[in-house]
Length: 365
Image (cartoon, rainbow, N blue to C red; front, top):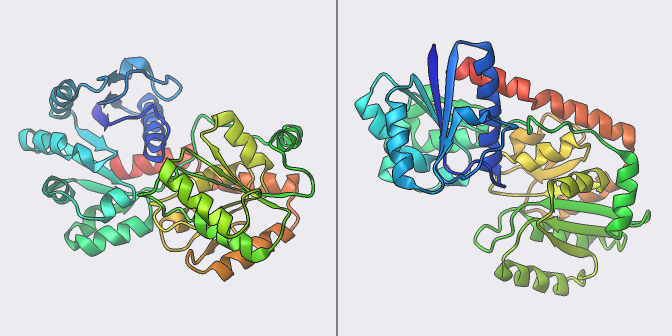
């Protein structure tokens, strides 16, 4: 019986890494039912469990008690055959466990900007001592390989997957009523983007998208930016909108529920996020699985999420002319319900929970 331990910071919350963690729990829970695997998880900051992803009996939540987490994590890790961590900030615990129990195999997942810059001594040590380093994209792998060529033999790409509990069905009737609800008429072309708006993380390209929309000079285009925002970034965007006379054409939606986000995906004509800092870009595959074409940047991990799907496109995130022409090209191409279904099926076939589970099994077990 192989004993597998997954350690997490905060799992049952909103965010890209949090969603990846939930995907891990679902996959490992599924594998534990099919293989000779004893699976357990410990989370540092969570105080509740979403049992759609993991049975409550297989997880301990420490409710932000770091001492409790540290003791439990090390104690359980030295008694496990395999330990998986989804973030370099957990380096200390697994390094201590590895020191006590050298036979325990350690796998660390690296996502994006948290691993691209300068790492602490502990984090660098973990990369060198881990049995496997799992990059979510080829882009992240290439950056790490350039910085740490000595880890080449154990550095692998493990692409992200779609949310395993979502069905990704498209309701045309609900789409029509939702467009009316948010003030989008039949003459309007709706572009959306999804992501947190923070003045220290302004790499998602929504400001570039606004500039490209201005260049098109098309008053039928509406751009909705979905996600929490801080006051500094809100003010910066407002100044951009005033500069380009687009205050009435662009809306900061803020946080929205999962149900409304799904309706936004179904109702929009195009998803645009010419980012320069995505490790992978879960929002891209989420949008495409909901039948929505996407445009992403060609200078980060977005490439891995988009490149195999012809209906979507990659763009130089710094070339406003290229971006505006690509937006126009996509919006001029009629996109009906059947097109949405084809795109959704294609995306689901590439990033399904079954493929994610199979990749985990082949790499780790």
